[in-house]
Image 1: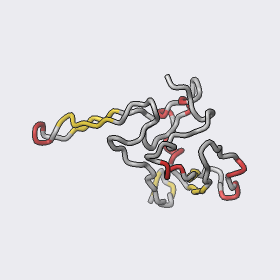
Image 2: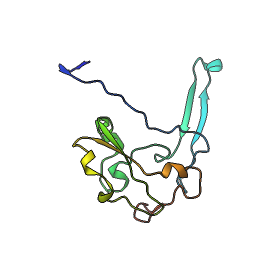
Image 3: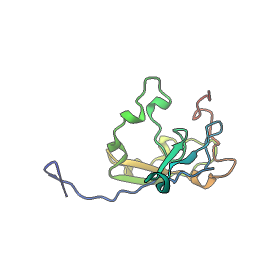
Length: 142
C-alpha cells in the first residue's frame, strides 16, 4: 500500500464502539437516546433516520473542552490520535478506585502508542453500579 510516496505497512483496525440502541443506559440526568424514522423508502424513495442523544451516550471521546474552559472540542481533535499501533492493558478496578501511573506497566508502552485499558467496568452495564464513580471524576450537573 502506498501513501504520499511512502510505504505504509497495512494494519488491522479494530472498531471498539458499542452499538447505540433505544433504552441504553445514559448518565443519570442526561436525555435518553431517541431514534425515529424521518422518511421511509416506500413513501419518499429513501430511508432517513433521526437520532437525538447526549454527546456522552455510548462509546465516545471526551474532548478537553468537557472539563477545561477553552479546551479543544471533539471537532478540533485529530482522528489520527485514535488510530495507530497500540497496546491493550488490563487494570481491573473497583467502584471508587482510581487508576494511578503505578498501575500502568510502562515497559509495554512505546511513544505514539494508542493505549487501551480494560478496567472490568463493562461488566456493570445495566446495573445500578454502572455510573458509580468518585467525586473527582464527575462534573457538576446543570
